[in-house]
Image 1 (cartoon, one colour):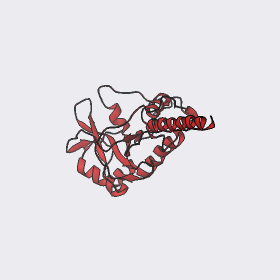
Image 2: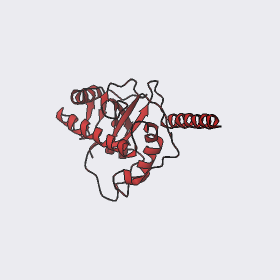
Image 3: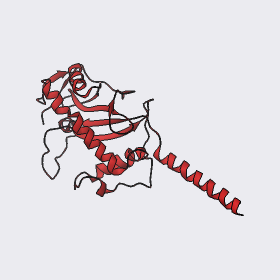
Image 4: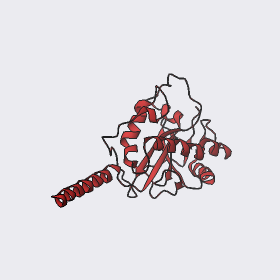
Length: 212
């Protein structure tokens, strides 16, 4: 009887471990994505400022996204891990966005980062990358002028040490502009690495850097 009970308990433990593995899901690296707000707003769709007022001119964090080397990615990995506002910074304007990022992307890295660690890693990576300062040092300013795509990549690589991927969108007049910058991060969420694969899409050889 005791042997049978132990056998059942062992099987339950195995099932529990397997379920945890399924929830956490392995992944190969993170995309750390930062967005230039002026390019988000300078489209036909336009946008509004938050109720707290116009933010300072800087790149904003779009997300820290687990990815696979084949270009695919996991999403919505744990329905039992809802967003907890207490684990993020207080705000009345961004809770919906943070909820989306945690539920869709953050839950797929729970094997490495809990909710607080996930958002803390993103903030740390933003501080270390210093995108706007890196571009300004190379004479690339958010002044509405066009700059060489290659020069933008080289300016960022010079400071960060790794090649970024640039995503562009088009303004209301149809001009290609700097929209988002992707950097790749190891599975610990701590260190930048060379990207195993880049997203699809392309920019013009010269792109606008809109003022904010």
